[in-house]
Image (cartoon, rainbow, N blue to C red):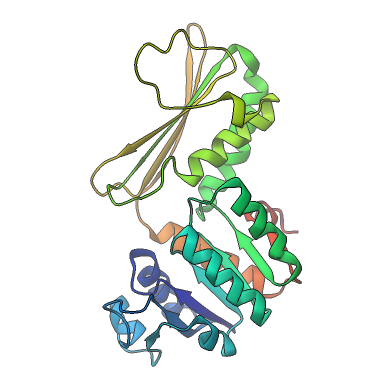
Length: 267
């Protein structure tokens, strides 16, 4: 039995995760945490998630919740996740981070904490997206520099960071496959008289509309043909299920920094 603490337990992803943990035979909800003053504070986490009482109230002290836990599942914000990571490292537990919006420096800091705890970070917990990362790298290598690469992502109007962490991960996979530097060759949207597109550009474009869960399309444009690879998430449940799979996998690992590539490789 893997004992799980869910942070952001009153949010869109948090309630989804609480519901799936409650349904699982091999997982136990040992804690639920929200920011102080959140409307869910003090309520039963299962009732907040719509699955009925589970006997776990939503609190605001992660350190206390960690006492009986194995793994934290964290879909909050970049700033909150960094604070939660500090608490997990002090307790020597594990954490699965699904938050996005980290700077490269913050991602390096997170990776470095693997010496103190079991740390799992993925910009997208969808199994399909993580398979897609390898596919687009293979396609980029096969097509080479003769094909322009553009990435378009669409998310709901409430998403706060842009571009999505997944779009950046896709761009990084393409850049690595083509021997390019995303910091130099990445172009984030275009406006005005920008001139002719250069051959090394990797375009990344963010669309925000309605309640779209998450669409990502990688376009390889050649002269006379175009290859498009698209992933569409139709429910947040796909991210929640991926996070639970990561939590199960992480519970049996030594301290270290891990990602979806490790999980999918069976390492």
